[in-house]
Image 1 (cartoon, rainbow, N blue to C red):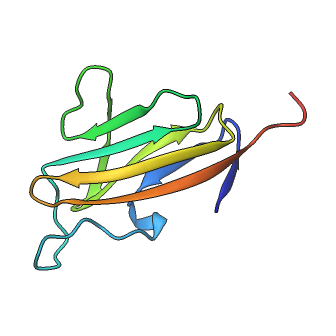
Image 2: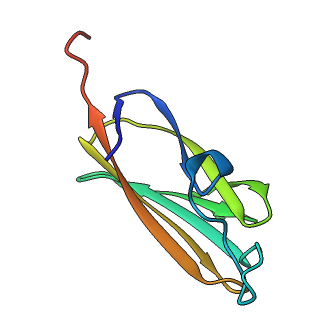
Length: 108
């Protein structure tokens, strides 16, 4: 499990540098879901929801890097752990989850 210092900016999703697979259709070809959602939360924290292609009220835009690849740059704060889930629905249905450890600074 990867750890980050509180306040670090982290790119979450299935972008090329993440090593995660792109969303793929039934033929195994990279494809875009109709809707992609990245949910980020931690113990005792409200979830932040990133959406592609069109975020709703109170949601944040998710970035499309390439066909089947999406990400959001997130600043890690608060909880000692951050949980996230990237999910596609519609044309391609798939999901993956992950977790980060957040280190608190010893010097403020």
